[in-house]
Amino acid sequence: MQQVSKGTTLVSEQSSATPWWRERWTWLLMAGPALAIVGCVITITLAFSNFGDQAIADGGLKRGLVVEQHSGAQPATQAR
Image (cartoon, rainbow, N blue to C red; front, top):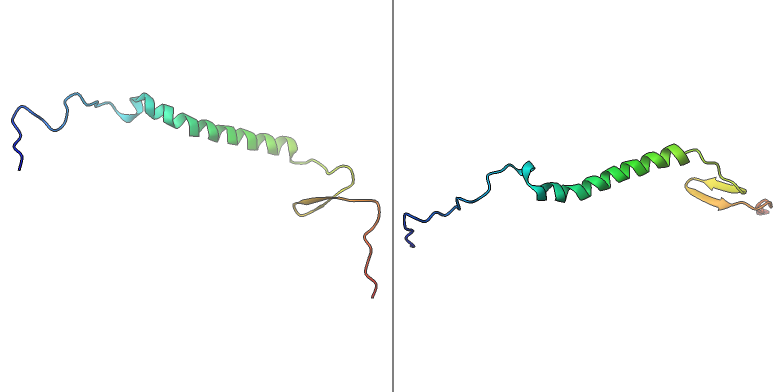
């Protein structure tokens, strides 16, 4: 067992007692993800407001999420 003299302490007296919101590194580390979230919200808002109702041009055919180029000829039906 080690003996500790009366003059030494295990916890430094110089340790910062400031709350977490007053530390600069906390805000610096949170700034990146916060800016990414703001950018994502702006991008989604612009995408839905500007491009939500675009029609398919040039003879395209939309089936679900797939847009196919539609030629003038009708697809051949199979004869029985």
